[in-house]
Image 1 (cartoon, helix red, strand yellow):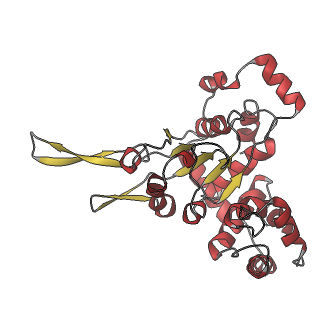
Image 2 (tube, one colour; image 1 turned 90 degrees about the vertical axis):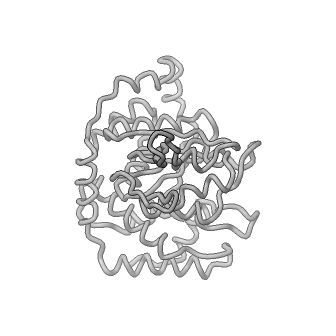
Image 3 (spheres, one colour; image 1 turned 180 degrees about the vertical axis):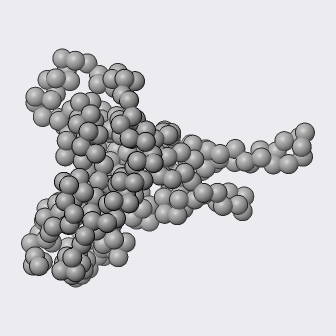
Length: 300
């Protein structure tokens, strides 16, 4: 997996930590939400990972007039046979890029709920399984930008992690300006893994050990979030399961066979911030809020 990170870093310059976070999310069988300003490499990161992991890739540009059928597919009547034939939508892929997901209406956003949670799609009363592996990487523009719709809590909770790329450092930006648009190199990328290899890595991640003491620690973090006066509500058991899954993947990327408390502390902001709503400003929790939450819970 280190080869994947090294090759991705050649195109998404200066973002090794963010690349690794995204890869850990995929190894944990989660879905990823990338929130940032336009032009900072969100879409490029998704395309790079799909190519390096050898995954079938589809991209849907979310707009205000996009309909659920544009994503899921629809049944078409065939006059010759007198029957309806289902035409699968772009969601029937291994990696789906939901680009600028918050520019679509809540009705269209909700079309992804079943797919992200149960890896299946129900259309016209028939349930159809999605490919395995199946991942959604969604990009989101900041909520203050014109033409955006806020993602409801039920949709946000389907994303295991949310991360922000941010501006590149000065050295990386200089390389980018001197060499031109890095996306031109996408066509030259060859897969490093096959989907079957990715599934094998996921099974290996499941075997990474988590001690009972760390389970107590996760439970204490969940309880502290629920008792905190900073948030309207605390973290759900699903958030705790997600934190453990991505912590196993993080340890696996370090070639370790057990999770450490540092892994949980490092990954908690990415798992928790989009799930918690702050009473101050009625917005998502900030990393500083999560840092204070961590400080309030004793390390086992």
